[in-house]
Amino acid sequence: MEVSEVMRRMKVLSLVLVFAMVFSFAVSFDNVALAKSTVWIYTGSGPGSVYFAIGSMLAKVINKKSDKISARGVTSGASVANCRAIGKGEAQVAIAQNDVTYYAWNGIAQFKGKPVKDLRGIATLYPEPVQLVVKANSNIKTLKDLAGKKVVVGAAGSGTAQTAEKVLKAAGVWDKVDRIYQTFSEAAQSLVLGQIDANFTVIAFPAPAVNQIAVRVPVRLIPIPDDVIQKLHNEGCPFYVKVVIPKGTYNGMGEDVQTIAVKSTLIIDKDVPDDVAYEITKVLFENINDLAKAHQVAKQINIKGAFEGLMVPLHPGAIKYYEEKGIKVPDNLKP
Figure 1 (tube, rainbow, N blue to C red):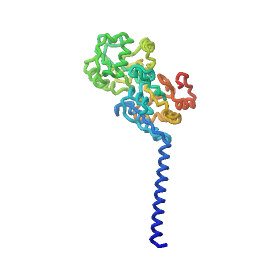
Figure 2 (cartoon, rainbow, N blue to C red):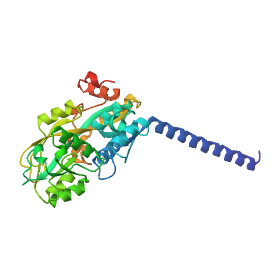
Figure 3 (cartoon, one colour):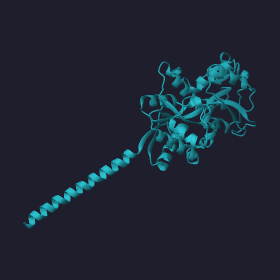
């Protein structure tokens, strides 16, 4: 055989071997990729959002700690949009207020006639309390004292405005206050300047929106008493939980204040495999210190309170984790 023919055959053989190696690598790489489940975590509206901070960090921790999941935290329109995204199959995991999950599951309020039955729960995370702010030297001491006062009830169409209406109606003063609709930042400025008397916020504490006021003038929070809380529960608002915001949380707060809160909730699509839901639950509760690097509110996440205010059934994968930890799951939370 001529030397040139030998060289040609060797070249062809080399090319075959190269293609075989590339194909083998591609198959191997593809198998690795397929071995991981991709999970989209819908969070909040952007870097200033607590949901965005917690959800994005959860995705990072999952990627670091899990060999089963590839997670991506993305911005979204928050609670209502997040529930709808799971219903459409656009998101596998999301954070949402428990009142919104209640509305979504039951097909009421913003979800009227369109229930989202694909929702399942991983856990409730931390409270987002009603924080009704006044200046520390204000003569407003109770909800009843708001009658005749200028009160910011939240931005028009916001969840805060919806909650403020429920609370003030339960207290019997909704029609007696001068209602003003402003954003958190607008309301902070208005209170400091004395243009309003009180300001509703619904947000995790300590809240920048309240500190924005407290660094300029001392503040107090108005308590929500037991009778108002009970009335809210009786009138179809089972999602509110009782919360105490400790004294010293803000400049001017000299005593603990009882209020109500919705609970932020980690929700998941019912079709997510059980082992993936189990892994997410495990990563969540075993890496709280890492989550707290994104926002200190994560320190309030506690497995003992994982069912408090949960308004949708748990995912079987989450149930497996709780049972391994010796935590009894209530029958009403089983799918």
